[in-house]
Structures are given as C-alpha cells and as structure tokens.
Length: 336
Image (cartoon, rainbow, N blue to C red; front, side, top):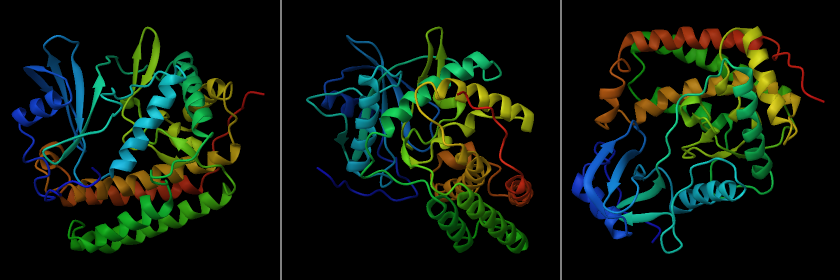
C-alpha cells in the first residue's frame, strides 16, 4: 500500500480519535489498556500509549500528505542502521518485518519509550560526548546516499518558502516591501556563503539536531525524532547546538568537534555555512507555521504568529542575519 486518502489541510487529524489510535495499535499487535498521553508535537501527532502486558510505547502518526511511504521507510531504515551500529538512537519497532503501518488513512510507527533530560550544553564534556556520537552518525551517513529523502538546499529551505509566503496573505501589506527586501538580501548572503564552502560533501543527516532532540541520561546522549532526516552538509547537525556570542560559539564548536573528529573528518569549509543554515531555517520556519495555520494545533501553540509584531520582529531578525553572514566564519582549533 503506497497511497492513502488525502485529508484536507484544515483538519488533517480530524479522524484521529482515541478509539482510532487504540485500534491502529491493536491492528499491529499492541493492545492498549486505554491510557494515553498526547506528547508535545505539532507536525505529527505523538502519543505515549500504555499497553496491557508490555512496557508503554510511543506512537507517531505522520502528518497526512507530507511524506511518501518510501521517504518514511528510508527514515526508519537509517535509524535501524544506526541502532545496529550501537549508536544511541530511538528506532521504530518492527512487526512482521515492517516499521511503517497504515490504519484508517493514517501512516504511523511505534517506538520504545525512552526518557531523558535536556543536555547541559554549557559543559565541554557533554558537548564532546554528543560530538562523538554525531561523528559516528555521519560516518555511517557517508557510506551510502538517501534515495527518497529531501536535500537541504537554498531552493527548498529559502527561495521556495519565500515565494510561498509572498503568494499568501500572511505578511502584512505595510511590512511586505521591507520583509521582501531583507529576505532577498539575506538569501544573497546565503548564496555567497554556499559559494565560499563550495565542494563540501553532502551526507545523510539527522537534519533537525537541536537540543530538544538530544536526550541525556547518566549513560550519555541518545537521539530522537529523525522525521527531518535529509541529505546535506555535516555542520547542519552541529550548529543548532551552539549559542551565545562568537567566543562562546567557537568554544562550544571546538568541544563538539573534539569528539566528532575522533570518528569522522570535518571539512573546515563548512564553517561558512553556519549562519547561512540558520538564515534558511528562519525563513523556512515562518513558512512552516503559515502552511499549517489551518491546523487547530498551530494557532493554539503559536498565537503570536498572525500579527504585525511577529513580522516586524522577522524583519529585524533577518537584518541581524545579513550582518552575521558578512562576518568571518568562526575560528576553531580542529583536533589533529
């Protein structure tokens, strides 16, 4: 089964009732005891489900229409490949040789429940530990390409979201010219940064490696939510773990790379991409919320989005990024 009934953008999860969720899990052999907890997820719908005779599991129902079966299966295969290498990722559970299931028009997967806390990213030892495992993820990711997953590039993350927002009515008329001008200027800076980094290798990535997707326990980090795994530059999985001023960023990046390069070489040219990738994420983020605005979960979670103040802040934010894009790449002493 490769195609599913499409749901309207206005109510993509209208049919995902508690009964539907429990029936879906039961259809693949997970018998719930009736208890469930909705977890903090907007793009997909994710629930912790208590089972009658097994440990609780986490069920993820994919947003209808976003990914194809082939793209989801490829995501699952990547996490299972990493899991087989004893890299601490949370991979989906198999039933009858499958990890992607279908029920009532929804695609879903079931995961073991894994707890953890936010990593203390101000600690060099924590960053080095995380860096070691990202290096191992990328070592595996460089062995073979994705076939179906997207590529992280300027077109997909920058120009297309920019054009979509301008074709919609989300940008207020009195801010439209200012936002368009600064967005275009920022994209010019992004193109220049990619030109300076020309020749970097594109590999399989986690793709959304921010602190919320790295859970920490006494045994170290583990990585969750590969929903945005993609092909792109290695630094994509590093820059979202950085914060603070230039000196702080250089220090944090040095700690990450100290662990990373024990397993995978790092191309110094990719340092030019840090602010470029941040800029693309900012543009893409606004379009992501706008595209989902008819989903009731989004106005509830982002009530400030559909307001002039939001777009005023975005103009200022992109101005800051134009300045950041003009700055030299971070100075980092790479091991070896």
